[in-house]
Length: 200
Image (cartoon, rainbow, N blue to C red; front, side, top):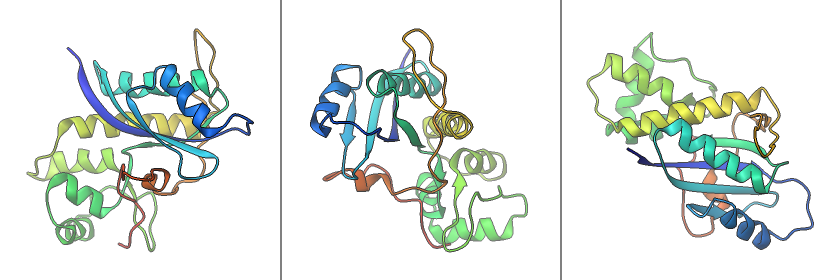
């Protein structure tokens, strides 16, 4: 039995004489016809997938392979949802941002942020793991599953360099920075995910 998984993959594009419109057409032809493709930032592309698969890992990895079939030198910047701020987390578990901030400040065992300062960022999956164990909050388990799969791809990509071969690919793109542009900047008409850069 398959499920539909919604997620976004964002890439830095290699230098090319191919126009953006041609790249989009090539992506649609090569298996990415289940994605909304955004090209709002020069040299970058984002694909919001709604992909059917037996699990989240298969959905994300197959989508990543489909992109690399067309753009073998593209570098993965971010798979989302993964990096999340308090507002993002509060929305997912249906509580106020103030309540989530209170939990973060008062619970010693709350997951350690990836980044602190003007913005506070976590791996979404780690926070949902903690909330599932420590709080009686309900949230979509499919979101939890796709957050784990996104974190896994981001982790692999940070530590390797992505290449594609027809029968076997190595998951090897180097992540460009820990915090990147909000994904919705790449889309002219539709916001894909909220920005994770926010004040604590």
